[in-house]
Structures are given as structure tokens and as C-alpha cells.
Length: 151
Image (cartoon, rainbow, N blue to C red; front, side, top):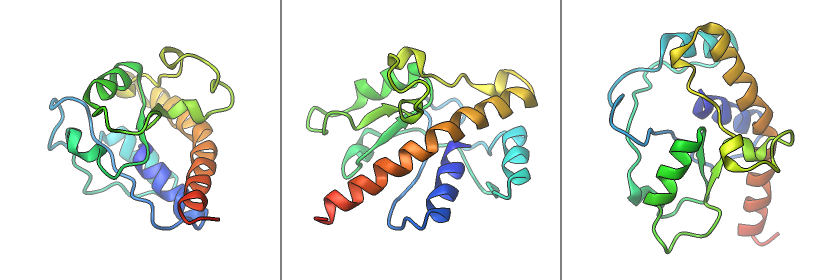
């Protein structure tokens, strides 16, 4: 959901040239489509995630990547272990570190639990937590784009 929500927010904000992608840290779901409950919630907001297939994160993707967002603390720790030493510090962050309500909390307190184990209400709760972080991500992206373009 976060991939499609962020991609849509970038388009709506007129921010171009940003690649948004998603992958898990394990191979458990590789090749599977988006959870039908997540797909339905996205569609209810006018976002189409048809065709999405789960993939596993590959460490080589750190090359040329400015920001890797984790939704839960376990994934955050997994990504830190995969991160090459040459990667810029701060490349791996919790998504909710961009949510002003929890930005100052420790990464362990910024997680979004996997709604897969719950019902539609859990997916709506995840939607709200993701949504609260998106404005901060957009501000970060704008700042990085201005910095990289010398403005």
C-alpha cells in the first residue's frame, strides 16, 4: 500500500523523477499479488495496484538509492544488516520517522504492524499511519531534489 500511496502523492504534488518501489525482506510472498483487502482499500481511494507482485529486496538496490523506507522494526533491522558500509548513513529509515507524531521516537516505536493478520480495520489503520508520514516524505524528497540540483 505504501508504494502506491507514496507514488500517487508524488504525482499529486507534481514531483517528478522519483522512483518508488517496494519489496519484502524475505522471500515468503515473492510472486504473489497485493492482498485483496489492501487492493480494495487502494481502489476506494482511486489508486490501482493491479499487477503488483511481491519481490524480495536485493542489497544491490542500495546503489543509487537515496532512501529506503521500512514499515516495521524487524524489516528496518534486516535492511540495516543488508546495507553496504559504503551507503550514506540515514539511507534506511522507518517510514513513520517522517510522521511528526512519532518522528522523535525510537525506530522500535515507529512500526506499522502487518495488517495481513487482521481485518479491514487493520488495513485502514495502516492506511492512516502511512498517510500521516507521506507529507514528511514529500518534504524530504523536495529538499533532496533541490540539494542535488544545486538550488
